[in-house]
Image (tube, rainbow, N blue to C red):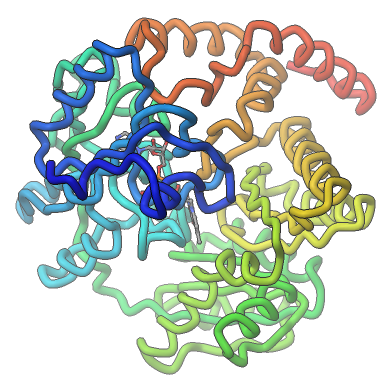
Amino acid sequence: MGPDDTILDGPKLTNYKKDMADFEATPLVVVRPRLEEQIPQIVKIANRYNLKLVPWGAGTSLTGAVVLEGGIVIDMRYLNKILKVDLVNWNVLVQPGMILDDLNKELKRSGFFFPPDPASSFACTVGGAVSEGSGGMRCVKYGTMRDWVLALKVVLPNGKTTWLGEPLPKNRAGYNLVHLFIGSEGTLGIITQAYLKIIPLPTVPVRRLVVLFDDWASASKAILAFRTSRIVPTIMEFMDRENVMAVNQAFQTKWDEAEATLLVDIDEPNVERASRIFRDSGARKITIAKDEKEAEELYQARAQALVALKSISTGTRPEDVVVPINKLVEYLDLVRRVASKYKLKIPVVGHAGDGNVHPVILFDKNDAASTKAAETAFEEICRYAIGVGGTITGEHGVGSEKAKLLVEQLTAHGGEEALRLMKVIKRGIDPKDLMNPGKYMDLGYDDHASSARSRNRRLGRERGETVR
Ligand SMILES: Cc1cc2nc3c(=O)[nH]c(=O)nc-3n(C[C@H](O)[C@H](O)[C@H](O)COP(=O)(O)OP(=O)(O)OC[C@H]3O[C@@H](n4cnc5c(N)ncnc54)[C@H](O)[C@@H]3O)c2cc1C
């Protein structure tokens, strides 16, 4: 590593103090390895001096998972090569710093693609997306990262390197440690190579539809009608008026500012039937992107929604609860009620096709009361999701933000033993707690578990439900 690859202070260090939701911490040092072989050496040094460690992909995560107080940040940006593309076995071998869009640009030349597409795919890395278990717009059809990772090469917290999984379409040999690492948020080890599954690009033409509604209820009705229609959209994204207004303001565009907008990708043979479903549900206007350029502009408008919202508010909390889709109408209504109760703006945007519509809580970061209101609103929305059998996070992960709520969810849904096992696994793999400490369930979960239990029982009784 050259002198530029070890950062101890100054403006360059500042780049590593915040994630994209402004969770903050100050690392002791940032290192930027150029060679994979340097990673175990760094981990061994950390072991010798008992220093905490966190891998850094692009820092686009949203829950405090990537920021670390007083430890070593390992920026993986230079380990960003495609090592092998195998069009017969349908997999690629990549380094963790590879940006998802760059991977797909390369694969497109061979007529293949890697389906998971977080809206941050223009910046986020393979290592970060695997470690977050990220989702994205195409999840409704193709699932999340969890469905597309075959094998991982990892450096464990003791400095030893191992392969997990096999680059094969089928493999039943042993416990699934690949899935254990997917979504582990840098708490178990450092991914240095990944075999990812790829598939041929669809041969049926796909059309991009923009569907406008005058109210959220009609849009929700359309989403539910779609679920039983047996048409599988490739994407089905929801944006409310505030989102579209923010996008228009931030990027000087002129998209229609309807109360609710759905952006939907449909295989061409199904377009007519899909349009009928939208019209029957009360859609005001349906437009089909006229060419690839316009389709891409629409996609970018949606992908940049969070960036646009960040530009109009000093504080943003982009949340990602998932509710069972049959609860979508009730959930959207709850978000509106919470916004009005705490006098906050909470635009909603996201993956309507799989029930993962993100409420983005806007607040004034310089005002203590507004910041507190945002925190309370966030907790209320998460607890609602837990109460209806949903989850506090579909794709953004736990980080430091939701460590407490993770305990609440698992205890509410009969997962107390799962919590204990998670802690056993973490201690087994990382006995010195070097890797990304203070994240996930490690935040004092023992103390928190019993209060979470009583809270869940009380909420359950109030709702007159049987709590699992
Ligand atoms: C505008 C915007 C839109 C977004 N849209 C989506 C979306 O649609 N879907 C979605 O799921 N998320 C979304 N996100 C969240 C985020 O972009 C994703 O979680 C992304 O996959 C994180 O990738 P990253 O490279 O930035 O990871 P980072 O933020 O750098 O790291 C995330 C976690 O991974 C760990 N990590 C990174 N590299 C490694 C490695 N090599 N080995 C082990 N651990 C590692 C880090 O320690 C950290 O815990 C969005 C964020 C933004 C800003």
